[in-house]
Amino acid sequence: MREHLSGIYEYDFDFHSYIEKQLRMIDDLDERKYAKRLLLEGMEKMIRCMDERYEQLEQRIYHEIEISDNHYEVAMTVIKRQDYDPTNPTLFPVVEEDIDGSVPEMLEQDTKKSYVGTVYLEQSEKECRRFEGQRFYHGFAIVNGKECIARFRVARANRYREKMEQLYQLFQDNEVPWKTVNTGHLDKFYDIFMEVESLTEGNNDGTPERTEVHFGEFEPCVRREVVPVWNIETIKFNCTQFMVPCVDDVYFEHEFMLSGGDERDGYLIHFNEDILEIRHEMEKIIIKAKVETYENWSAFRIAQAEPVMSLGYDFPILSNHRRDTFLRRYAERTGVSLMTKTDLFRRIMELDIQDYIEISDYEIRDTIEEESFGEGMNWFVQDELFPMESRRILLLKFRAVSFGNYLNDAMIRFVVSQMQMEINEYRCVGVME
Image (cartoon, rainbow, N blue to C red):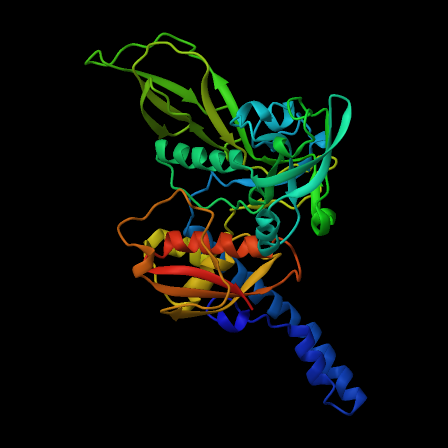
């Protein structure tokens, strides 16, 4: 990786190793001992002093260029429903109904199919498409006390996509800049529906008491009774005092105080019909509203502490955390963006992907024929000014760090989605070498 980023990394010079190597070139043992004592004991203090001074200078320059804290980084993972820890202060259900078992009430009722559960497929993007593309899967259902052969279909769990769209709208309403959220876990959840008409005649009007689905070759990778959790907590709050109306007697300003919690956490206010404007200030959020009093308004706390992995929380954490680097600090301070190879690689390397993939090369093309991954984690962000079809292609090439990891493809999509937001002149796609 360093051959691409010689302007970022400093060569690590090991003084002791260099001296030891040079001493071996002295044949006379007495001379070698004398030289070793002179160099290692005499010059070591000087070298150590120079290193300390250099490090102090480096840190001073580094901290002079400050980067604004990001209070809105989103992290998520997957857990077994039975392992959910309601006392965990950092991870909360993406959909509350996943925990209390009321998911069927959220779904549109269809006489042709019946919801029987949700599964997580621990497989690559390609295999997920195959899994979803199957016409049906066989199994059985217990209806009215009788075992009946049944067929089942799978479909993406849209409630998680809806949650992402709602989250994006929250950021927009609060005027907080949006960063791509890594939906690698969410995209692997599938709802299972039973085809009622496939049941034995006379049994298709009852509610299934129990079902079992056989997923064939995918069975070893299907995870049942698992739910996604993320670092976003829903908070209900009420008006605690009567507000004095503004001069024009049209609206009221309410304060949502941020003191008392972790100062790193970010907060978003849910926009409703009574709210006219949301304004973020130091240690508080000002809510301009039509009403003098209110109750059961919603806020969302995005916990920035390191996620607490409770007992049974074994799946990897995926986040949109961005590493703090000197060049990132400098670029954000100056507002200058140089689209060079080094800058492009620097942006990608700052993303939280280092355990899965790394960037290896890129190309500018007019067309692409090989199988590739486009941006797909910001489907709700539309850019109608510059249609994708008219753009040249920026092909990002990656290689695996964790070979065969089922999340590698998702990481490529995550990088491509974020780069697409930052690079408007090209259509970004990615491939695994």
